[in-house]
Amino acid sequence: MSPDPLSAAFSLRRGAGARVGPERMALLQAVGDFGSIRAAALRVGLSYKAAWDAIQALNNLFDAPLVAARPGGRQGGAAELTPRGRAVLAAFQRVETELAEVAQRLERGLAGAPADDLGAIFWSLGMRTSARNALRGVVSRVVEGEVNAEVALRVAEGVEIVAVVTRRSVAALGLEPGRAAVALIKSSFVLLAKGEGLVTSARNQLAGRVLARDDGGVSSEVTLEIADGKTLTATITRESADRLGLAPDEAVTALIKAPHVILAVE
Image (cartoon, rainbow, N blue to C red; front, side, top):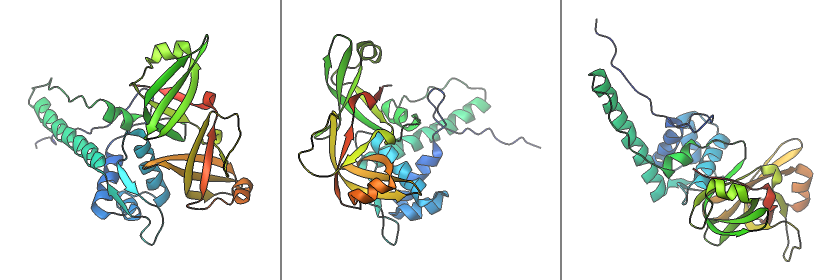
């Protein structure tokens, strides 16, 4: 009896982070097939919220959105893959095909086939963090002080996030204009305010509109759209959300102190 053929599964992992791979690509493929987040979620066995969160996380980790989506509606939100999303999906599928060929070579005793280096694409896919918000961008400027430095990260056209880190961190991470990096921000560090002409000590004041609101018994999770395809999520008390009248399409400002922004690089 012949043994089963050798097979290989392609996944990505950075450090101690969780494995990421075919599951998210299957979600992207389903979005492309159905044009609906809810239908895509059913195809891959996720809840609508889990699928929506996964899509927003992917969008935030790339320089351009992978999925153009809007929540709500009878079909659970219309969605389509962007050109960047189709490119990422195609790259992943290409490597999976090549990996299958490598498995066949290994079975024939021909090990050593080189793997494609997909660089920033798969670093973004493999990244895992406890921070609710992870926004990819490019360093636009670095202003150094005696001990700390102010680093500005452009995450979208006209949208910058400023972080204050030590000069040692700037050197260790190689932070300089043009360098790609990811801003990590816990949702509990994001404050929300309404109105114009706000006077606050928060270095970051990001204008946006409410995209979604999920209420719990005590807290509310509010997701803002701060640029096309870029979102920011805040966790505040439900009482505060009610008092601010936070509802879809409401204009709101996100306030984030610069020391609360963590920067990561490849």
